[in-house]
Image (cartoon, rainbow, N blue to C red; front, top):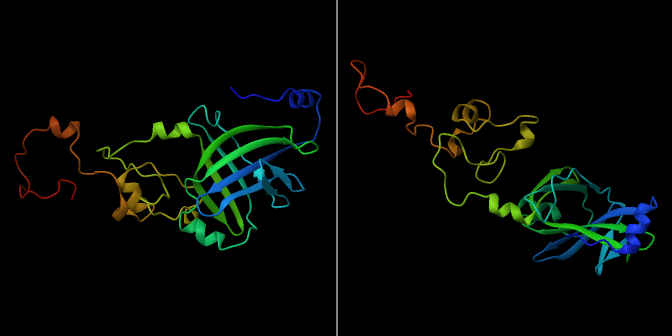
Length: 218
């Protein structure tokens, strides 16, 4: 259960307009980076949270840390170092993100809304969006392979390989035909389109046609 400091709860109930968000990202080789949507820098848990980066909180689904929920945060990364190269190399994948609600007038009055892991980083120029999932999401992941006619990759992930920015607004229905005709990505299809189904089980031997062991699809 999330514990909200009594003084903070009192200020929230009174309708004060001094609340902001802060995000603390923990990277294995870079330490901890902090960002806030307030217009002045804040210090949270000993981490300096940078302001004026245009950071905003996206929609949150369920409760991070309690359910397999998702949330998002986006802003401009103006930190030092080759950040874009780090992101493209996947070094931000799996980074821990703490999400805080803070009274910027009294930064000691704060509550941690949740802790999640970066599941995906979307870049658009200098702006990035961190897609964050709760730790319970690990229980929803399939371990090993599922044999199905449908693809078990996520559109745009490392196993899929599609550049989602080249197909704005398009979704994938996981079918082999869609993978090849729409996305031109049949070589990376992660399903088994020729896997026999119920129609094969109940099929009768053919009385004509070709019987050379070739694909029934061609």
